[in-house]
Image 1 (cartoon, helix red, strand yellow):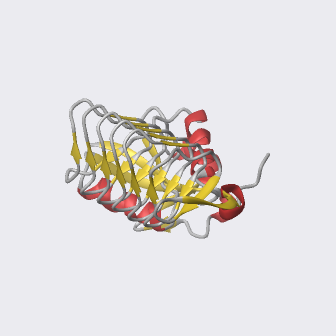
Image 2 (cartoon, rainbow, N blue to C red; image 1 turned 90 degrees about the vertical axis):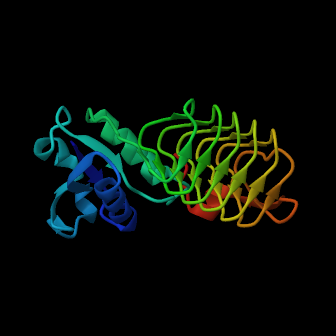
Length: 223
């Protein structure tokens, strides 16, 4: 068993605790939250420390970390904390459900969470800091970039590319060899039959642009 500290203390962190505890070789030993948002010193019977001081309580040479944050600000909050955790010297673990089908030559980056009943076929590549909720199909040789959030029951066909920070809604479908630009948002039930430009929001069958900017939709504040 290797010790792991979870960055976050909300619902996503609770799920990470549950899955790491009952379906991995990791032992969750605590939580870390940015001090401005820390409301308690204990969660699920474990200590909650200020993220700013995490390495003083859970040394990075003896602990791994996992950043458990949802898709807020089009995955920017999770990406920021992931980068900050790496800067503190931590290796960020990934979780892959024992009930997922992952072919032997699939590549999965750090701080990625693969729920149950996902199918990842031959030579799929998944980047860092990605969430694949339950029941998705990712076709052969598809590439999913970093900091993406794939909800549930999405079908991504073969030879596709999903750009960094993208969000795919429940039950959407993506045809073969399609490219989804970075920061794109695909609505629930949308059917992607053409390549999608970055920062667009797309809905319908076939998927069409709404004319909205994904940054506006998710409240992303540009630097």
